[in-house]
View 1: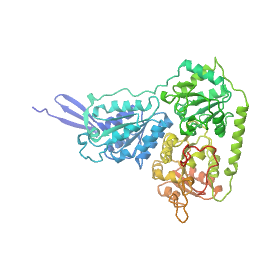
View 2: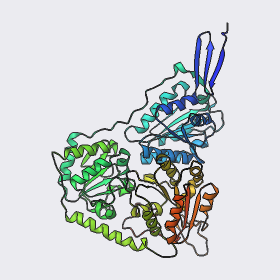
View 3: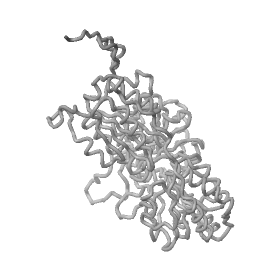
View 4: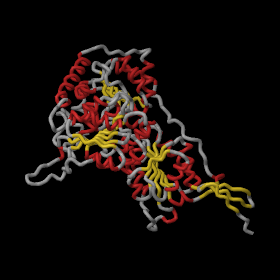
Length: 578
């Protein structure tokens, strides 16, 4: 005999079933995703809603959680990873199936190369219709997994909380990175008995491993013997929030330092031992390098000559064991969390002090810093009618308060800005990083303002870079995120990739004087159009005081470039210099 059933709908995704066996609560996969993310401490979701994830996105918003809906899935994935970087947590992106999910893959790749945590939940075709030509059926897991630390397909709805918990832990463990959860449509809509759902404890703060104590002693011994020491600080130290320990170490040892672009702000830019402006001389001359949270990749010319000396000794701090000794043998490898290892080094100085006196090494680096600053001074103050990068950036530098967050995107825009605009706070600058991914500016700026609503956020982009995700300035306007974009409009991709042929129009040139400012106004923001250098600061002032998402459109010299560099950023000729 079939028992009598009576269903009582409490909410769209929770149903009570009254049967002869008693009352059974059923819950949908969509609701399990929402509840699980909340349980894991997630407060913001980035998404472009679509099939089959609509119930997740709508339910998230209906639950009163922050939902940032964007115009392209790449924007969602990139904003989510920037959210991770600013908060030391896992940013979450939810994407529709098929091409919606594949649109996140550049963002996933960027997170992977930059070692940032990111959880992408991708809707997918139904399990029961796989290999039947289902709507938007693609090999999502197979194509995405190589870019991820962990990737998995949900095959039973009741396991959703456990799988989300695993994903969060995997994203944060050791060296952070992206993870992917493939979520078939039938796993989202299926309702299951709540009593059989696995509910794990929320993930905890990731472990912060210490280095081996004996190796701490070895590191200080090597450092003490140095005649030309150098500390290099990377964005891994920023992720670890190691700024206090780094400053204490520098002040106690008097070691000169320089930073990677996103390591800037970890130590005060005005510190007398900051030799970032004498980067080439410092790298070439150092006999002992203490590398903290940075990698010997292309950004540091692989740690090899001629950028570095032939026989320098490397003390390397990294949370990833396989990174120790990559491209240059490490004299001492300190495997551990940057914050914890620097704390160990500071503590060890009590019994084994290391103090570097003022020497020709340090005074020479300071003199080179002054010389390099003098080299760019004419460009910073140029009154040419056609504006160059340095003058624009100088005006921005002089206007922006010290607590600003600077987002940099593009080629010359990103590179030259690191030379001109000092960063006064940890995690105060974010850019494309190791991946060199053009187009990150708009989504990164959105995330910066979501996380830091009370701080000024300025996004510096070339017109080429702005074109990648530029329509999402509407997202900022719609959500009241008063980011100010500054578009450096030189109407070309970049001058060193242009090939001129007599009588042939260069295909790398864009339409000049495009009114991006009017585009911002049409989308609900504030726009400014600038052609003269003296008009830059007044335009910035109006933009920030508008209280809206704003865009300052600066028409600049199409042939403007950086000052000559002894070493290009990249080793292979013909690539752009990030």
